[in-house]
Amino acid sequence: MKKFKEYIEKWLDGQKVRGIQVSLLDIRECVRIYNAMVRNEKPKFINGKVKEILDKCKIETVVEEIGWRIA
Image (tube, rainbow, N blue to C red; front, side):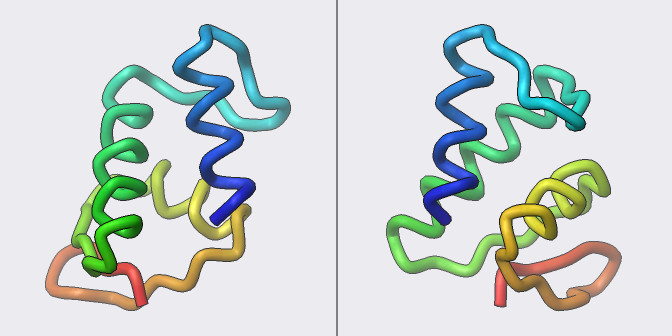
């Protein structure tokens, strides 16, 4: 989760993360998911790019309906 937070902070400061191309929508979805995780929730999402980012950060996800959920 520390790596995920670092990525978000870089994107919000206008920096880029090497090897990851993100849109504003992807960044907002990551922020939403991070905030939910801090509150001990298990958010659902359908954004495939966010799934790739979470995989790189070694955050476990499970298939949920048409998307994924934080495990």
